[in-house]
Length: 260
Image (cartoon, rainbow, N blue to C red; front, side):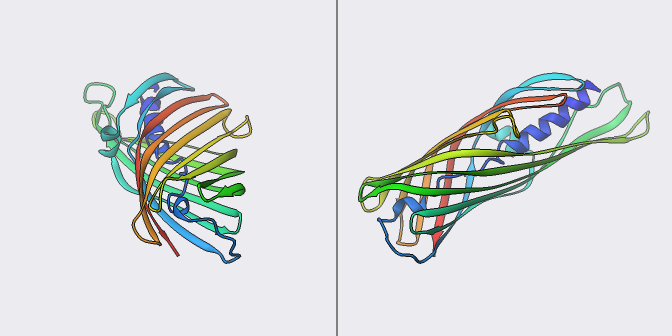
């Protein structure tokens, strides 16, 4: 049972690594100060090449683990990552959605007890963060705000018939984290800028504690299109009931933005 639980948890953990929202919008970093009351919208698909390490303890035991991006990418069946921002004057509303569907084969207990096994994990993350510009100049701006991130994970472990009949086990968990954050933009020239974002949250209301740090170098291709590359770090500490999850994630991130 401990082995089965271990593979269930690893599936959940693998989907979690990409489920955190990207709260720094690269296209927004390219815009000069504006006083217009008109709404501006930005769509930003992205990919996070993250590794993963941590420790998970559940009802049937615990496990420590580490994996690079290649290990996790090989299990991916379907995914979507994207951010949208609506901005008007000094106020921005950022929403991020992530869907992952991962499936991989797993070792099975016993000698011929089961014909094979597979673990499948689906993960959805949805967040909404409001930011307000507290200072802005031609060189850049600083924004403060907060919001909420919601998480849902569903994992299924299937054991194929062998000497014993086949069976299926499933596990699911969900929570929501309040977060507070800040974003800064430094314009280097007409085309290049630096964007940095950080937040902390959880506070025992969802997870016990979570933090994120994110920085990118952004290049404006046209007035409405840009590309970005950078690095992101994530930590999460979740402890509810008999489940204790501590995760550390970090890796390069690339993305593009279209503004209209």
